[in-house]
Amino acid sequence: MKQILIVDDERDLCEILSFNLNAAGYDTTIAYSAEEALQRMSEKTFHLLLLDVMMDGMSGFDLAKHLKGRIPIIFLTAKDTEEDMLKGFHLGADDYIVKPFSVREVLARVKAVLGRTASEDSDIIVYEGLTIDLGNKSVYADGKEVPLTKTEFELLALLLSERGHVFTRSEMIERVWPENVIVTDRTVDVNITRLRKKIGRYSNIIATRQGYGYCFQKG
Image 1 (tube, helix red, strand yellow):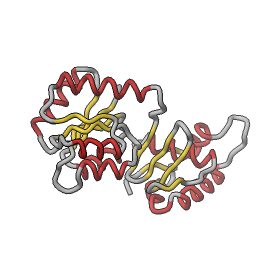
Image 2 (tube, one colour):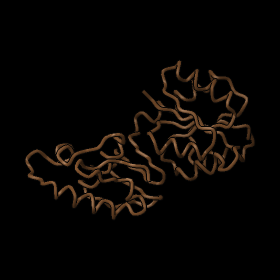
Image 3 (spheres, one colour):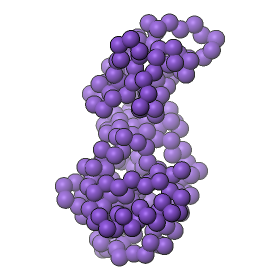
Image 4 (cartoon, one colour):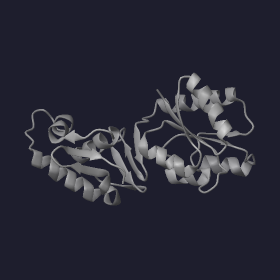
């Protein structure tokens, strides 16, 4: 099921959009500010953002700039000048809908955008400024690519894709290493240590659970 994050400070509008999108078969989450949206994106992966522009604090344009095209965005906004629309598309928007709009229009635009991106690899995991692209096997920290080995990449992807799970070293060996390779618990620890160093300020998202193994935790 496609996950959609609705970001708008108009609560009634959010509820209407959420109700209709859920009825159309999508799973929605609501954030009433860009800052709250970043928090929600640190907790789960979304396939699309419906994003207002004018909000208190960080604007929708600022949020789009921060995300750097890592997730499809449809702007829903009262800013209707050509300059505003061009700015939205320049920031990577996939569509731009001017308020007031009909729910049917939004549903049609959502279907179109998700249809276009379905053929692309949308398997992207985001935590704050850390992005894992499962399609092209790359990792970015604050916009800069992090050179990881295949094993390091697979370990990081495993931990961030199943955030509620504590992995034992045996589980990690089974999930990451080939069956015909003999791997010890110490090998897992060494790779985790190297991975932590490479992802810099995000190293503390990989938590050690003494006597068990490793898991994701919020930094």
